[in-house]
Length: 123
Image 1 (spheres, one colour):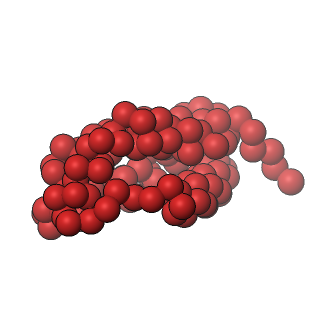
Image 2: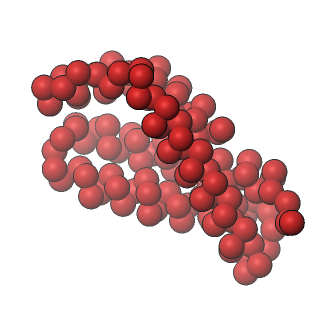
């Protein structure tokens, strides 16, 4: 849920005009509201994967915030940072959008991991 809320605020409010301008520069229409569900599902799947990663590394690092942050940073590295590094050279969007997206992900993914770890219980 944390990922969805942050993404709505960042992409749906703060960066909405910038994203629309970037799409227009590509000759595309802004992302229609009718496909927002794809991003909502993506965030929930990523959140589930994040809690799974936390649970997987918990025996090695111990339960708690530190382990949740480690899981969040690991996921950010492989999803947030690596995708930005891989896509940015293509020049589809302005570099600033990739950079800011990676920075926002650096905050939201570990935060979501801490919340997920707080709610997580061993079966």
